[in-house]
Amino acid sequence: MKKILSLLLIAAFVMTFLVGCGRNGSSEAEGTDTTQGTNEDKVIAFSVKTLKEERWQNEVEDLQKYADEAGVKFTYQSADDDSDKQISQIENYIVQEVDVLIVAAVDCGAVSNVLDNAHENGIKIICYDDDLTDAWVDVTVGRDNYEVGKAISSIALEEARPGNYVFIYGDQASGNTVSLFANGMKDELAPLFEDGTATLVTEQYCINWAAENALAHVENALSKYNNDIAAVICMNDSTAEGAIEALSAQELNGKVIVTGMDGQLTALQQIVKGNLLSTVYKSTDDQTKAAMEVAVALAKGEEFEFDSTKNYGKNDVKFVAVGFDVITAENIDEIIIDKGVFTHEEVYGE
Image (cartoon, rainbow, N blue to C red):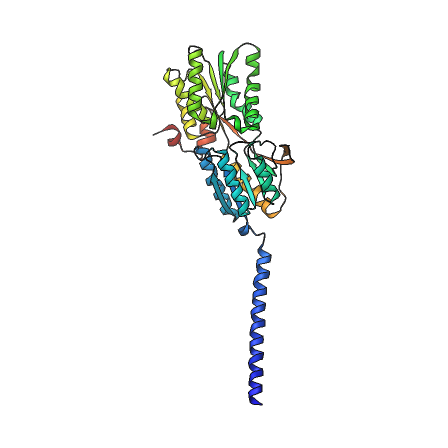
């Protein structure tokens, strides 16, 4: 009898222990369920076209900073200006089942199918600083690219320098983005062309937005028009750098108007030297902060404010607009140095 009672007591103890373990396991499972959707579980991926330019390096760093502040996981890969490589990287992000994909495209049309695939797999897509072609996108975070194009030419319009004008564009693979920039650049200077003050003699695109391509185009224009060039209107600071190099070889620095965009340190230094008339500064901090805030909201299924909508051929895309500034020698201290973007020593030298 005692033996039977002992066995019963042991059995009861074992059952109690197992039930207790079951409750603990259930509690942990419930805890996991309740934390699904917390920031720590969310993965934000950034597919960036290149890290060869200073601006993209800065933007990756800023996105990482804001991801850390939001408590989300952040990962990125550079396509090194290779569209096929970017598509492959995005396919890998689909396999990894990231929550949100931020895309700065090498070729704004080539990523269409892979972004459709990402959407079909439940990934939210943010178009970053571009206008894509025939692609599903949930949100675009960036500037009004037509207005930015006008800003690129705005100080040249104020100067109203008479003579021959050269327009240097970015890579045609950037699609709508380059088209909008170009339309804005030309429309802003239309009064000078219409009244005969200026003549547009050359328009050239630069593969990968590369300085060496701009250098070659400007060299050709200088040769063709016997150095009789009044202005070189460039779509970004890298192409402006190539234009300045070509002008320097002919001792024309400071004598020919050159404009750019991006507000890179090298461009700001050229403004101080008098070789660059203006650049359009697009605060990476403003844009990366806005992009990460939107990414976190998308990942958590939360609402967020947006300014208008766009359509790239597949759906209505929410547009979150970010501002910009035109930098000249007159306001470089106020906008760049006083706000801590770069130091006085960095911009002006020792």
